[in-house]
Amino acid sequence: MVKTQKNWSRTLAVGAALSTVLATSAFAVTSPDFPMAGFATQNGGTTGGKGYSEVTVDNVSDLKSYAKTGNKIIYVKPGTYMGPVEVGSNVTIYGYQGAIIAQPSSGSAMKLSGSKNVIIRNLKFKGVGAHDDDDEDCLQVNHESKNVWIDHVDVYDGHDGNLDITNASDFVTISWTKFSYTSASTGHQFSNLIGNSKTKTSDRGHLNVTIHHTWWADGVVERMPRVRFGKVHVANNLFDSKNASYCVRAAIEADIRIERNVFIGVQKALDLYTSDGAITAAQMIENYEENVKKPQSGTGTAFKPSYSMSLTDVSTQAKAYALRDSIKLYAGATLPDPGASGTVTPASSSSAKSSSSIASSSSQAKSSSSVVPASSSSAKSSSSQTPVAGEASLTKHGSGSANQEVAQGASIVEFYYTIDGATGATVTGLPQGVTGTLKGLDYYISGTVASTAAAGAYKFTVTTTGATTNVSKSGTITVTGDGNIEPKSSSSETAAVSSSSEKLSSSSEVAEPSSSSETAQGIQAVALTRVNLSVSGNELSIMGAMAKPITVFDMQGRLIYRNFSTSNQHAVTLPGAGGYLVRVGSESHTVRIR
Image 1 (spheres, rainbow, N blue to C red):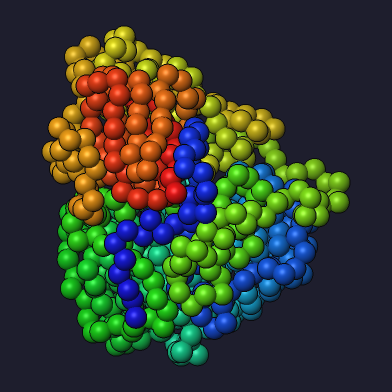
Image 2 (cartoon, rainbow, N blue to C red):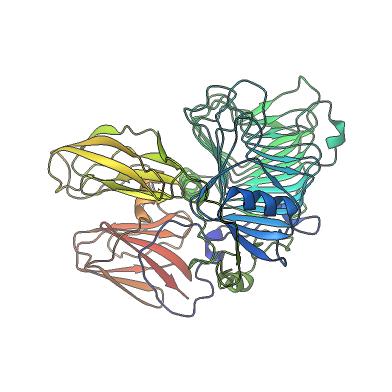
């Protein structure tokens, strides 16, 4: 049965095992190590290469060799690796930030064919562009592959599709993944098939798939996913592609549980395709729909999962926007590097063998200290081949223009650049209050122009880093001189606390950010300067807060407190143990309490 738990973020591994009362630092955007959930926990569980030896690869020859042989934990260094990469059994493939698997002009970037017990995490898969001709998917799970966990990956521009699961493959979970298409795609922007033919009756009893906390972003037109024969749990996902004609499609003998998802600005959340045969069920359960042009109520009663899985409530706009912003923040290749100071266990996750998707606080505390090192315990690839590299590229996305006009004190319209062939990017020339933020390999430009910023044209330049040949893209933000001093909240937001008491409400109905750009601003990595934070119990004290806006986010990126300080010392009561992101003016800090 599916169980609801309101404050999932409070059970995260982040901060659960910390014995210190307070620690603050600049925060870079990396996702917590959310535990495995869904069908990949069934049929004995999915552990990948756990228990086998580890290797770190920096060239495509070694990657292909180790992946195909199997029985290995493989860490992939930054760089672009040309596929196809064939994956064997009992394998974990975990990427460093900047690791990209590229699809060749013909064939897949990565292919699982009859593979068993596979974990793929923290990788970016770059397709050659979707075109209306016959070729392979960017990432394939095929030919009776079983027990597969695909987590925190970014797949875009797949030639035929982005990621398909076909031919009696089974017990698959896709989580915290981003699917999209760019201008490199000219048609057939159909992201995900589960079951590839109405005549493939051998798929009956297979294709058990869970997709959760996944983002179908701009460019995706259809198949999010399209299902034949399978039992598919589509839960707590985000659908906001402005190009979407339909999102989920139910076809012959599909049994789909579509639960607590967020659909914003799409034509159809669900399409019932009965031309090929009767649909078993496509049940819509407690979803949030906003500006959906053609509502569809669904049909039948879907299966009840054999696993337990905690889902976020999206019954109000505030709650739905909280989930939306969390997914936009963490979906894609946003996990820390192996051996980094994080809480990730690349081999198998803290709950790989558990039938429950949410570990207890104690078990998660244990996993939070279990960082798998990538140096002393990992065998370095001995190949002397040069890492795959070349000229970098920057591709602009998002609704904001690279050339826009904005008033003092107002927010720019956010946009971002996708980085290929490089490990990161920097930006120069932005007006005060507007910053660049690296999230995986997407570089976001967002922020609120300071009221004190001089009026005029600011030409900025984004430049890639870490490539053999770096590239730059420029634009201009023109600031006009009619802004406001104090920030104003969106009318759609509900105040979480009284301004007189400055106390945090314990209700789950808390204030939410009006856009993902605000969340991104709240977690930017910036140097600590004049603001000092201290804590006593659950009481957070902020010194140096005079005339500064203060926002507090939980570790899923949800806004839980907002106020404007009128004194130098400001107090906030935090709701309980865990990690928090605190933004004071333009500075950001992390706070962790026991």
